[in-house]
Amino acid sequence: TINAGSTTVGAGGRVSASGVQTYASLENNGEVKGNSAALTVRGNYSGSGRIEGSSGAITVGGNFTTSGSIKASSGTTSFGGDVDLSSGIYEANGGTTAFTKSGSQNLKVQSDKSTQFNNVTINSGATVTSSGSYRVTGANWTNNGIYETSGTTSEVIFSGSSVTVKGSNRFADVVTEGTAVSFTGKNEIEKIVNGEDRAEIEFSGSENEIGNIEVSGIGAKITVSGDNNQIG
Image 1 (cartoon, helix red, strand yellow):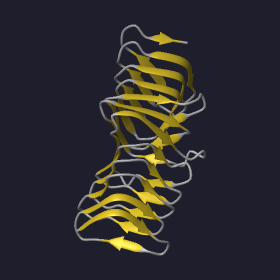
Image 2 (tube, helix red, strand yellow):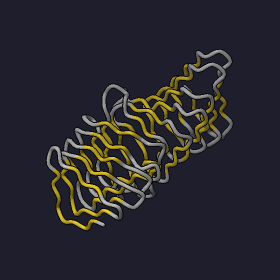
Image 3 (tube, rainbow, N blue to C red):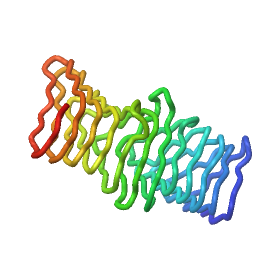
Image 4 (cartoon, rainbow, N blue to C red):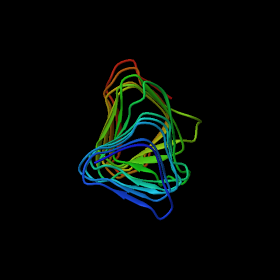
């Protein structure tokens, strides 16, 4: 078990423990290795090193900035502040990424669409604004707060085979690479692209506002069944 104050891990350094790890803040230029117990940074995280997550929950209470890499927990990895992955690598590890701040929270990702999350959860009270494009490879996007994109060129690429998108979302561009995406809440989407053969996109919620729709896959379709929806 580690219960530390503000901690710096130098280049080539390595921190590992068999139990819970707690840091007041963490600058990591080496490696911090997780396990089946919780790994918590109460304040800010920064550095060029690596977090090697396992099954234990990873929680960062403050801002998270890395030019290194993080292998997320196979359970839940939670961020309570701004998240800057524009120069870093994020490995989703089959888990859930949660945005938990009560208030505004910024998400920056790499410009080459290489950032991938598995399942995504946005807590009630959080307003997440993202810049850049990224993939969601899991089955669940659960938004209990507010999600919006910064700018008009950001893409959210849903590549899971069957995805449910819940909550109030304001997307710039949405691209589907899986076979089925179901939007159950209220969404504003500037452009949605369905280019996969036999893929199905469904909007079952009400008051969706959808700009341009591109359907190019063989047998692909988009269904809008809710009330008071606007298209085009």
